[in-house]
Length: 584
Image: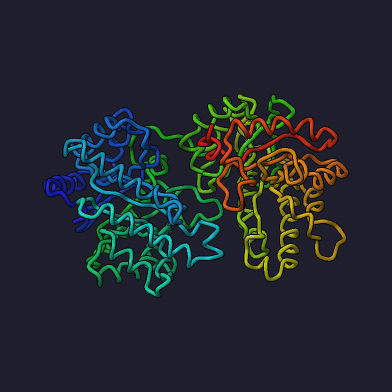
């Protein structure tokens, strides 16, 4: 059974009656699940969330865990959910959980859940743990998939060992295309996961039920395998906005339209003994769909007016010397915006590079950018991946460009991004070692296309991160340093002067002077970027060991030491998460 505790049998009979009353039926099926990423929704007891579950026939909630919330908040919510015949599974996940060095974070979710359950009455306990990891978005997946799979397998074994005997239902998300992925030992990843977990949730993100690329076809191999193994499968659909990939989501359709598709899907899949029901990703986007009751919903994003010139962002009243950081975790803006702005205030920041989740509606960013602007902070959209240097992946970069342009067209002046910042670093690719000239040629071509596309109808700033040693390379076919070429093409660059001392032959100033001289000659600004992340390339790379106070002491030296360089404009610290948790 999906819900292991026997107390749920009567509840599920009740739910079946409830579904009949509401007119929405899942033939011979009992499970309808959703993901809830906004843990704060339960702080008032979760009335909004449980009311929606009641209206939509949801009986399983994957609830992201915020370990800083008091235990009493979870107790109250889970007790109320159980009274509503809704099971609650502790949700956690991060692509980095596939890497050995982040194993403790995954096992930590198990420890937290087990400790919580041991300390509360039975009616307030979690019914399961659900993992959403998606290691295929890691840069390492592109360059060394086998190593990622090997470390992920080890991490999952540690997690499963920790939860063994707990009576918690264990589930995990898998993409529909995992049926073509094998573990290093040659075994199929799907068969291994099904053998280890109580159920898998197949992310069959399409909005057509029956077509060549429809939900039924994409999930058939997983259901057939689960039938053979005697395992259980949930089939998941998506409601998030997916710019450029509208076929992967029900966004833009009504709840009634999606429910008709889900009802058809559930009936068609009932022939599979493994099919246990459906999951909808995710609560907030599902709730915002038009139709289906549940009260007022936020208005959709306004028409961006595609093809028109992109309006400028309102000027931000800030100090001319830049002091900033990078926000790499895209969900941080959605979940911890107040914390980020408080940190920015404490550290006197006036500049943020923010990685975007292009699956989010524009409304997800408006409030944050508006508040940042009011606080004297410029916000620049950020994205990047080593493979963006290759011409075959230029379209991935252009998706970011088009998203930001459309966003800026759709929002008010103080809600607009001021630029787009790229972090690409193709020198980690194996192709760089075998044929660097080809990679550099494709990289410069892509950067030229990026700036051309950005500037043809906007004044958005184009910027990028630049390693200090790239001045040793020349652009193929041209007698010009690669660094100088990049500085000339961009509106500004952030120079990754990753050293933990300002002075000295291997200090920040000395490793930066070549690029600063280029920028002076070209009349372009340079930001000096320093590292707070733990480094395995030598202690001199990062301020991780020395701490935040020492870093501030070195950064304060830079204006005087670099006073002869007109291009020096300020500093950015890589990155928010590391700085926030740095040693004093």
